[in-house]
Image (cartoon, rainbow over all chains, first blue to last red):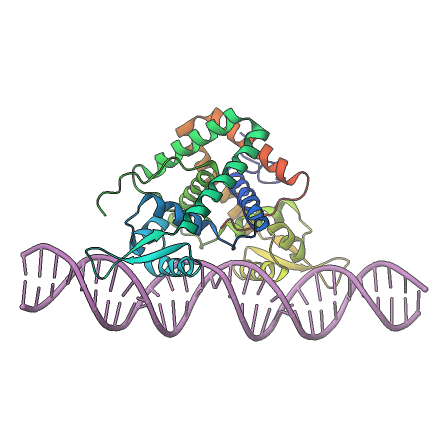
Length: 160
Length: 160
DNA sequence: TCGGATGGTCAACGTGGTTGACCGGTTCGC
DNA sequence: GCGAACCGGTCAACCACGTTGACCATCCGA
């Protein structure tokens, strides 16, 4: 039944819809960011900020695990964000190999701005489909994600 | 780093949930593909197939517009897929500069397989949240996408 | 106390996109 | 008609952002 949607598109399946919607939302987000004259921060940067805000003693290796990339890749990101003044690398209190990552005030600022912009995007979505539907959508996606990953940490790797 | 329990901080917002869910679904999709011993086709390839199936007289430039990439990038994709026997380049009937792209039988096969696998993913989602929720989710996302893009063609560019 | 595991960096490379130059066929204005 | 501009397609150089691999310094447990 309905097995043959394989020509004439007009109804992409749900996974593709997720991708398109997310893409549209990030485009919106970055357009607003550009309007505000911010550096071209990418999603991975935002997720880095959020992680550091929640885990004040995190190291580069911790961050790499969270982002689902190698420590080398995480290290590059960290270096870049440190150059731009969004975070600092401080000596680790007990491990002289390691360094503790800490958001600067500028980093916290950005995080607040990002929260504001994402809320804007959500409000946009709510305007189209209704606030109750946004709530339901969040609930359903969370349920699915929990189903897939259980209690394991969720990798945030690029989507493509 | 024993003490980090609260990985899912306050509550990720909807855009991030979209990204994570889509990522989980494509991971599932590609895992199944690998199980079946297929070449490592990426989402852009699948979208290419779908577009060609729906637009039998498409050229490389058309495809580029649909994928939202440059014609050079589309040309690389086409060359690769032609090498792998998924599509053919045929002379354009009226324009001797252009070439018409056509799926081979192998290409159509892949498309049928992909549809089957994506349906599996959707069924998975339905098992978790209920078929009615999947329907609603599709409807809402379509509404949002329509809100953003109107009647313009939707670019399928990478998500990150 | 010593050997393996761990945090971090450097370097080389791969993938998949970009920009730019170019060729030849097409179409438009006059 | 015909030259100029436009357009389909390719080649080449480059870039962003990840990877693998080698390496050093430090840490820690048998």
